[in-house]
Length: 89
Image 1 (cartoon, rainbow, N blue to C red):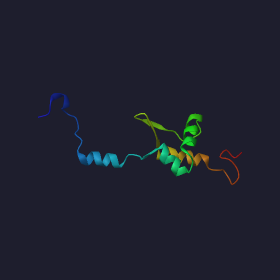
Image 2: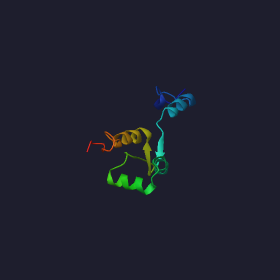
Image 3: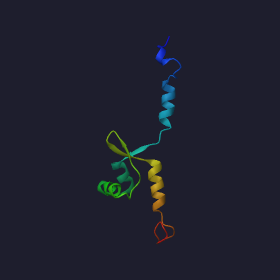
Image 4: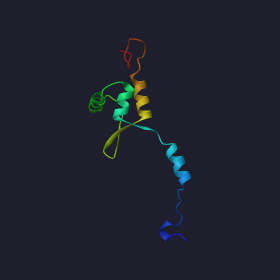
């Protein structure tokens, strides 16, 4: 029998945990993002400091980037038409 304070709590099986982990969004390190974008790590750091890059997540003191945030940021960088910036200017 479970202790009273655990009564009614759902238990997590390894199958449930495995399913949950497989649905989590991948996170990129700053080095992985820099490699993907073919820019120096210092550029990613500068973009973050200046508020110009994708949104970041701090996990255990380390900066990570959700793939959905990177994709959304990249889409916002797309030219509105060839030779024109994202805002059409």
